[in-house]
Image (cartoon, rainbow, N blue to C red):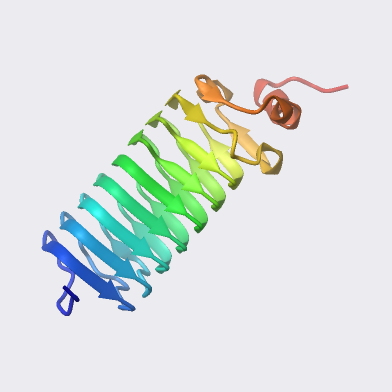
Length: 201
């Protein structure tokens, strides 16, 4: 069903398709989206705090900033998005995939992530401080700055992350439980040394 209504705070969207809509500034806090598809359009300064998204696809939407704090996302696919700042700390994400996205700052602090995949994405700053992440995976991705302080990774696959492109890595201990390519350890060495206060001669 093609959507022709409004996105509302604590509202319900069920089995609808939203195309090329200007959703700038909408407040959908506490909303429930079930089997929803968003194609194109803008989400500048939209608010999805505490929203419950299930079986949702977001394709080609752009946003200077998007707030999605303390929400629950299940089986969500975001493709081709350009988002300046995604503030999503404290979320619970299960089987969420970001594919072909250009992201500035992504805040997933203190979140519970199970099955988060980034495929073909470029991220300037990825903040996973305090996050608990199971089955986190990167495929053909570049991240400039990565924050892992207090993070707990289980079965994390970083083999598809270009570690040579990392300019800063905070929270080295958060890498425990992650799988990296042996060839990438050399690229990590200067960042590990800086984090641990080791001087290289």
